[in-house]
Amino acid sequence: GLVKNGNVEKPNKYFDIKDKRDFLYHFGFGVDTLDIPAVFGDTKFVCTGGSPGRFKLYAEWFAKEANIPCSENLSRSDRFVIYKTGPVCWINHGMGTPSLSIMLVESFKLMHHAGVKNPTFIRLGTSGGVGVPPGTVVVSTEAMNAELGDTYVQIIAGKRIERPTQLDAALREALCEVGKEKSIPVETGKTMCADDFYEGQMRLDGYFCDYEEEDKYAFLRKLNALGVRNIEMESTCFASFTCRAGFQSAIVCVTLLNRMDGDQVQIAKEQYIEYEERPFRLVTAYIRKQTGI
Ligand code: DUR
Image (cartoon, rainbow, N blue to C red; front, side, top):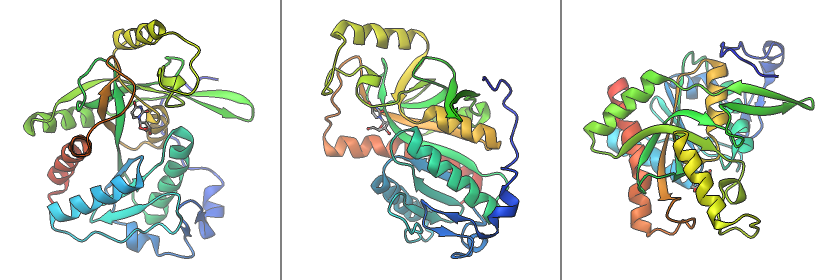
C-alpha cells in the first residue's frame, strides 16, 4: 500500500502505557536508568551520520568552536555513540537504512522522553557523486529508492508499505545560503538511496559483477538525467521517518568521488578530512546562527 499524504503521525498508541519503564536498547539506557529530561531536555538539533569516530570528532570540533563543553559518550551500548554539546546532539547511525531506522526510532523516543517538542534532524553524510566533482556538498531535494521511486519501502507483516520522502524546503534553502557565504561548493539535487555499496550502486569493483561497464555508465547517466546528484544508503528512511514524525530535517552529504570517473574511494587522508569538514562547517554555521551560540 502507498501512504499518499505526508501527515504527521502521533507516536505509537501503546507508547504511553509502556513508556513508563522504556529502555532504549541500542543506546543502552532508559527511563529508569538515566534522568533523560535533565540530560537531553534542552536539545534543539540532532546531527547524525554513519561513523562513530567522525561524530565524536564533530562534537569535539563544535564544542571547541562554540567554546562550550562536550559531553562524554552518553551511549551505554557499543552500537551507537551519543555526544551532547549544548543544544546539539551528535549520534552516529551506522551504514544503511536498517541500522539508521533503529537509531532514529530510539532518538525519537529519546526526544519524547526528554520532553523536546520540535527537534531538527540533520544527516551529515558521505556519498558518491553522480556527475559532480569530488568534494561537492549535496543538499538533497528528495530521496529516491533503489527502484527509482520517490518513496521509502518498508515490509511490515509481509506487505510492502511505501511512504513519502519529503524534506524541508526552507531548511534546505537556508543551508544553501550558508554554503554560499562560506564558499563551500554546494549543489542541490535528488539523492539515490541504494541498499548496498557495491552492486546496488553499479560498482565494478565488488566481488560479484554480472553487468558490463557500459551498463554502469548508462545507469549513472540515467540517474543524472533524473536529477540525481549523489548516491548513499540512508536518505529514503531518514526523510520518511522525520517527515512522519513531523520533524524538520535535511540531508547534507559530501561526495567523496565522482562515480562517472571511478568506483574506488581512495583519497589521501588530508583530503578526506577536508571533505569531511565541509558538511560540518556548513551545518554548524547554520546551527550557530539559529541558536546564537
Ligand atoms: N556512501 C555510499 N556510496 C559511496 C560513498 C559513500 O553509499 O560511493 C555512503 C553510504 C554508506 C557509506 O553509509 O557511505 C558507505 O561507505
